[in-house]
Length: 339
Image (tube, rainbow, N blue to C red; front, top):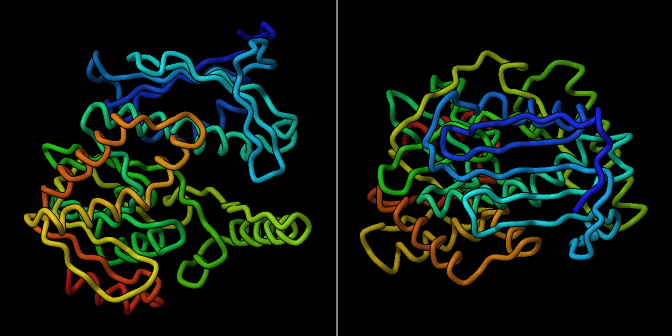
């Protein structure tokens, strides 16, 4: 299957919220990346039957069955997925020349296009939704904000923290369908230039964000391709943070990219279907799963069923224009009226 150079390969396991285990094997640079991404989500014990995903980063894939993906028309990656239907699934990923200069970029590709889509699938099979959402909590109650990327999840969650809420996460959350328990997902924040309009950050972070914005513009001008190149920083590295523990789902507010407020009655089948469709359409992970690994019809049916069961834990879902909240005052109004 692969060629490994002995003495260079290390391995680390991450038990994410006791719900799924990720094992990464590769050189130290990749482990540094995944330590930063998953180190704060780990728990010491968990269910013996919890699924696991093994990511093996190797120098060369020797099998003829490897898949190739031309990402954004610029970078060609090779990988293979084994035992997709088993409790333990294996991803073999061939190292790319770019990781000699920018391991974070390759790590982010593996994570966002292969690993987390598989986590999404494996959790669905355990009746858990890895939701593309930000979330905060107070007094054991979780308030979550599913949305498309760039609609204001990070800005809203950080603003609510300043109003006394605890942070569950700004991008992904694990939600148990039957119990409505929301598990925190304390990954690094993914910051862009637009976040600086409402967020004070250290000069070094501000410079890094500006540099990434410049690189992104240069790539766009020279190739016509758009890349989302974020600066990864943990929230407690730029501000005082209280991280939430597992909390029970209280409200869901969908941040749409435009339009008027709309309320979906989760007891009404037609409303429930529309609300579920909004959440599914906003998930990047199911798109990557379908494109790069394969989303079977049965998995798609499980997905819609799990999302509806998550929604059934609340009486209604409010959809609002996330991009209309341009100031802290706007976000304070949201908190006072709807949380």
